[in-house]
Amino acid sequence: MRMKKVRQFKLRGPDIVSLELANVLGADAWFEFKALFTILHGNLRAANNAHGGEEMLRLRAYDKLQNFVQRGMVEKVGKEYRGVQTALAAFSAPAEVKPDDEPLPAVPMIS
Image (cartoon, rainbow, N blue to C red; front, side):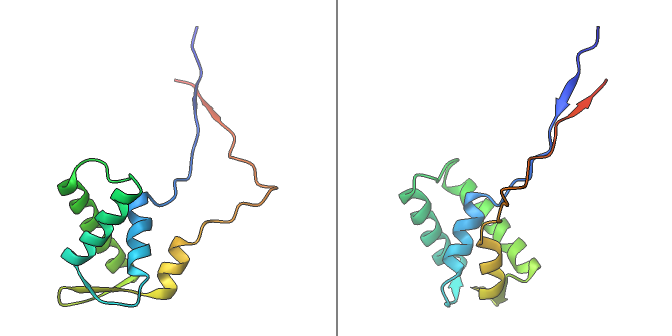
């Protein structure tokens, strides 16, 4: 007898590092990466969200920063970065969930 596998699709929002990076870049100032990471790491440690080691967090933060630059959410001039206020506000605003919305139904998979 075959068992049905149920797979459900979930939309995942931005992770903690991306949200905190957007929060730090929300200030209208230019940052070099080292100073930006120092602030980011301090904020994440204060909230007890700095997991996986400092070097791994540095790599993740740099990767997310470069993704923000490619998407036009952050300006880069030389080695300094500054957030684009309108794009960062749209990114960090939580998605509104209507009370009528229901989660997507589970789809049975037959294998």
